[in-house]
Image 1 (cartoon, rainbow, N blue to C red):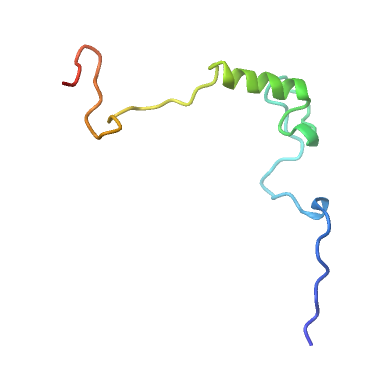
Image 2 (image 1 turned 30 degrees about the vertical axis):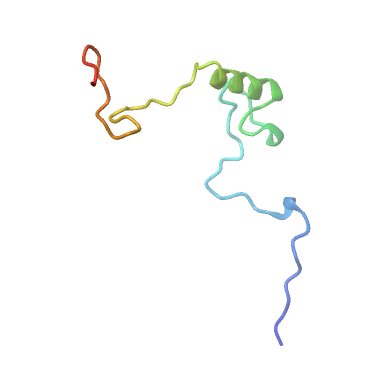
Length: 81
């Protein structure tokens, strides 16, 4: 007969992946991170980071090579006709 496993009843029973550091520093102020606001130490630092993203301080670099329709993108001084 097969042995049945007990179901996991709460999220705290999950184990964190081994590659995630537990004692990482807050990327905003450098204090130890708190599990509730991870990777930040507080709601304030999380909000500071969100504000930086929303205000454009952080930006993901983009290399535009083509327009949406597949035409080469216009470069400075040369516009596509």
